[in-house]
Figure 1 (cartoon, rainbow, N blue to C red):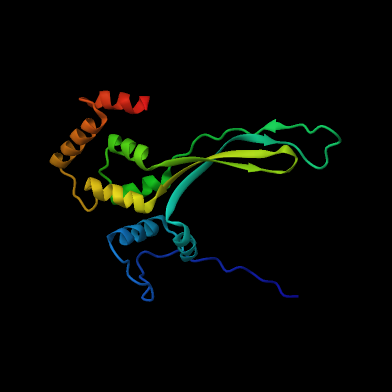
Figure 2: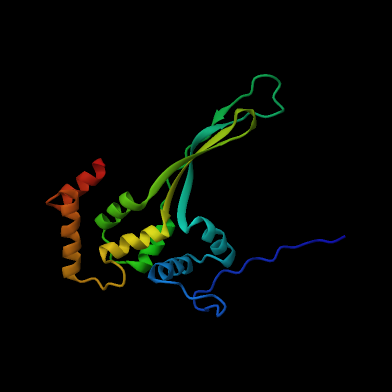
Length: 188
């Protein structure tokens, strides 16, 4: 009898460059490669997402119904699936911590509002069972474009740049104070 065992996949080691791998074509591709290294994506995961686009996501259950089965003698007893609390977007936080650690709270809130795409997904099962999910997604190429446009890549923060960033955010939000800006973000 032949028993097949799976060999565990090795995670990409950001310190060891693969000489067979071609260098990224430009700064956007190099940024995406750096993100994948920070997140520890293995070669298999990289190849899979190369076809669909490099995106990071977090997903959680927001409801549904379960309980129906083929063993029911008549009417199934369904019950609600509990809603999970919305998780933190840890992958995005991890990337920003490495790439732009000086990001302010307001900058982070605006980035989330402009880049994070929230979608819903529904999975139907047999016997009337179903699960609803919400998903937050960020495309790494869009993240690069956003950070580049803002001038936040490869920049050493100073009091002057922080002040300019804050003033730019206040102007973008149509606010004159930080507390006014926070109130507008909370309302949106």
